Image (cartoon, rainbow, N blue to C red):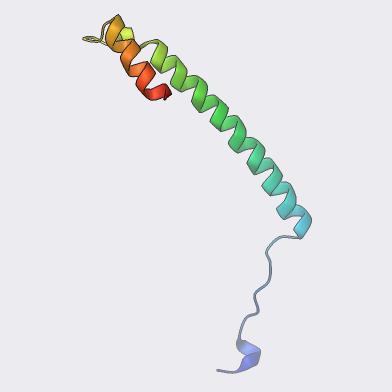
Length: 67
């Protein structure tokens, strides 16, 4: 194959754009983790509302997941 026809690898974004993307991605990931943790805690707090799970069992499940 002719060398002139081979494509050269070129970065699709400038370094400034890549840096900004990574910074915003990290901030978004942190926000998502916080949201997931809040939602998980709400689920654990409401375990007693599940039919068949009483107060003691709900506490045992919550302690297990919090370890």
